[in-house]
Image (cartoon, rainbow, N blue to C red; front, side, top):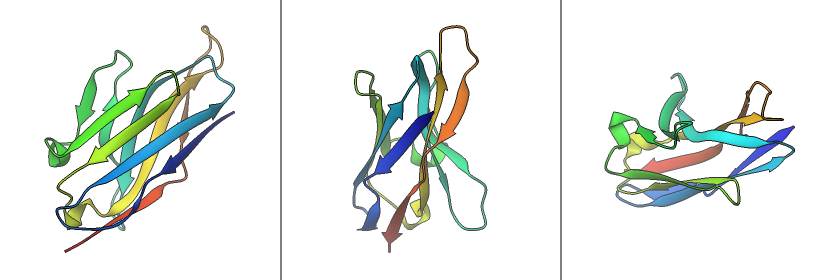
Length: 121
């Protein structure tokens, strides 16, 4: 089983910054890719930023130039630096990862519990 624990959410004024972190723990052979999604009330969960299995990055158009995703493979963590935050960034942010139990097993998808980010105008 894999656990993803997020931290770093909170309340910030528009134009401010926050840094989210997600740490993976448990038993797994590999954990890749990892990324961040968000969901605001009445909307579907959407991709914010993520690494592909090959190591490249994808960003939602709405956050390009403002958010930066990074990861520490040795620590199995993925971070999201969010700058120039806007009220429309308000949402619950979820860490997402695919983990394998062995080199030959199929990957399973895991989600963190979510962390609230609120941007006031």
